[in-house]
Length: 250
Image (tube, rainbow, N blue to C red; front, side, top):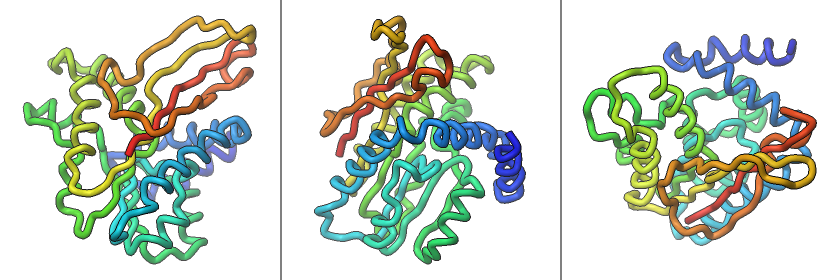
């Protein structure tokens, strides 16, 4: 807990005031990723490989944008930084540990942007949500990655929807669909890596609960699929584990 508290304190002054409320979630994710490093390694490598394959045959590699860059564990940041003129990392929070890692590598072509990618505020204001509309102003854009972000948008939107009145009943579905539409409408190549479903499985292999993390919205055809043990046995309970189904599409 001391390490987490120090990371929180170090990240706080580096984060814009509108996004400071999300630091706790990012620190918790960092902590779990450390505890589950061995179990998450395959998922992280498959995520990185999907991004590598999606970018491999691009004719031009000027600007790449990573949406939901997070801890950078599932993003091949070194290859992207070497291959592209500019790499833009977009997330609600960029932890101090991530900033330190990037600084240690002395990357000169990486930019960090804090941004809410959900589109919730637009929908709440009665506007058509275009959460990825800002990408139209990114010059020389050749590649966009949505990195294990979409289901997190769904979770965050679902929490806000439950806490706030006056939003459309299909808020979660509309904003998930808006993200997918934003990717498909891009004039450049995009790579979507996202978990689409989860299952609660006991130690005998029996499934007790399943859910669609995209709330009925269909993702594009998958080029790769795998299972991510988000909570191995012992992480949340000694009696069950939580597994997510992940797809990659480009």
